[in-house]
Image 1 (cartoon, rainbow, N blue to C red):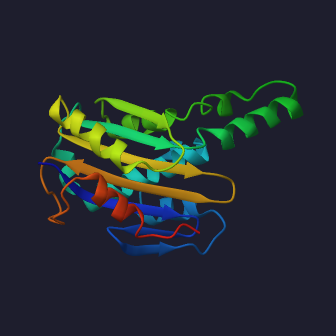
Image 2: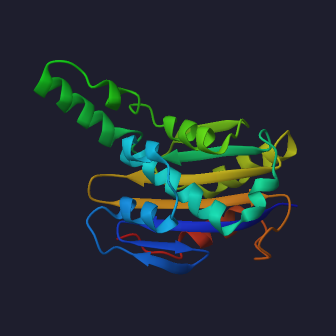
Length: 205
């Protein structure tokens, strides 16, 4: 049996952890505001694109909520992420840099693949487990539940999952940590129905 041990929603203006509002935007750059609220110092964060910043913050919020994550081995945690826009925001910025300067920006080029966000999380936490990023038309609870179960039945002890859809105007994200143990005693057994219910508890603005 597997459990949803903790979950987090980040919208354009509000952040919720386990269904409780923890921060509301007071500045234009909400991702930076969230980063500062975590009280961590990670200089590479400021060089990331918006998509990677969003995924980084979501993962750090869950890590902060569950110190028990530190007890996992470097190969124990798998990463499973998806969205519907790929890296479109950065792709357009990369194209603009080419048009304006006549040559592509190396700093943007590295983020023109959406799965780089998993690399950023892995580097920060020294996690080397399995990882998968897929493009989907909408949040697919059954996909996350089924694929996580497969990973947990193989070599993984836990799975950090994230739906990370982002544009210049809107953030729609849902992060959740699935483990073989109920780390936070939320009594949320893993199922597609439960994931769909949790995803829908927040209205994305």
